[in-house]
Image (cartoon, rainbow, N blue to C red; front, side, top):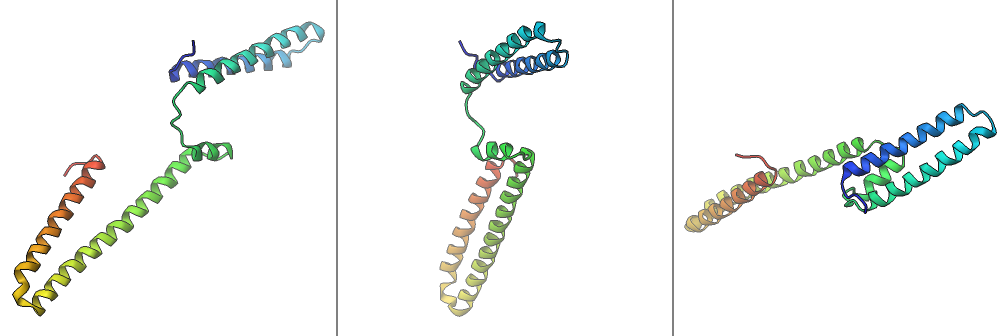
Length: 151
């Protein structure tokens, strides 16, 4: 029965590290044929520990994106990947916020110019501006709630 918790897998990783340490000590203190059997036993024990670790780790839910695994496999720090990803998202959010603010300003300026050009449409223009302002406020509240901050 394979454990399904991260703590159990963590314990198996510690077992593998301990087995590797024991192999290192036995190799360092190698005294000829009498320690050869000990090394064979330790390597067999390591192989068993690795097999148990592999089985237990494969039973865990896969929550790590493949891009991060590739990033780590290439010898890079996953914290740097996370930082770069957050910076990229922030840059995109700033860009979209700027576009939204520009369109809001354009909407208001267009409304003012339309009222100047066609004064008889003031009521309709005001209704459209009020309606779009209400929709924008609702979208902004949704974004604030999604981000987990309160107003």
